[in-house]
Length: 116
Image (spheres, rainbow, N blue to C red):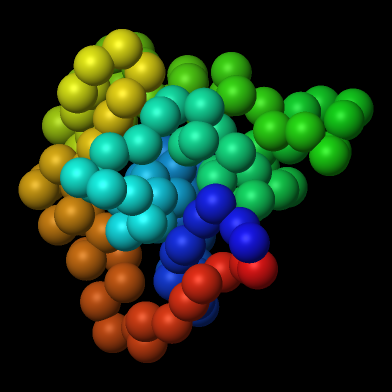
């Protein structure tokens, strides 16, 4: 069974950061306390969007550094208030993140899980 749960169909023209946010929300739905690790998020983003998050030259592996770069930093999901750290490498989706996901999926049917 897949680690991830996401919704289908996917909104068109999502940014890389939005794909990570959607993957984070899928993890939150499956975990106790809505918390998940950064490593789980990297795997989930790769499972949901392998073309965007596969390690260059090794498509069978996730590129955790790419995911981390979109989570951390001055323009990252944490900085923008869409994800927050609970402890080292443990995150959750914030109310603002949930609101953004709702905006992305407004008008689309909600189904899942994405892969099993």
